[in-house]
Every structure is written in structure tokens, then in C-alpha cells.
Length: 114
Image (cartoon, rainbow, N blue to C red; front, side):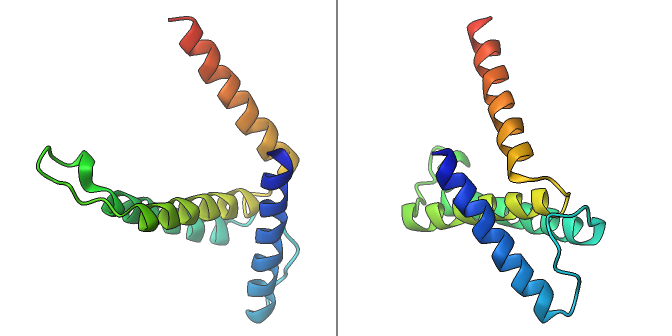
């Protein structure tokens, strides 16, 4: 699974590098870039909203709106935006993998401590 995440990270690096080339900007990434990081954080909030719209069963007991295909697409958008935030915050795939792993371990530990 780590290989899959690794592949997706580098695929997104390649995509963002092409975007930066088109904009005639420095395409060396990952890098700490406040402008691009903020842009992708805003995009992330929008994508989370779209994810909520794809499955409105959380809203009330009467709401049955659920579009599984759209929900999956929106989950992908959220993950891509989160990758972009990491990329433009200067974090490498190794740092990101380690942070995610540590957080999951902490969550497991917290659950077992209950």
C-alpha cells in the first residue's frame, strides 16, 4: 500500500510541476510556498463541501441523497488537495508517510486505552 501512496504522491508532483511550468513559475517542488499552500487549503475546504453534498444522509433522517460514484470522486479530490497542501508546505513523501503512520498508531493507542 505504501508503494501505491508513493506513486500517487510522485504523480501529483509531476502534475503540479507541469502546472507551474505553464504559469512560468519555479517548478521545484516539494517546497514551502505560502501562496500555493493557501490556495490548496481553500480548495480542500471546497472539496470537503462537495464530499458532504455527495452523501447527504448525515443531514437528517429524511435525507436519502447518496451518490456513491460522485462520493468516491470527491474523496479522490479531497486526497489530491491534501497532497497538494503537503507538497506546497515542503513535506516529502517520507515525512508525510511517517506523519500518517504515527497518527494512525496514536489513534490505535488511544482506542486501546479506552
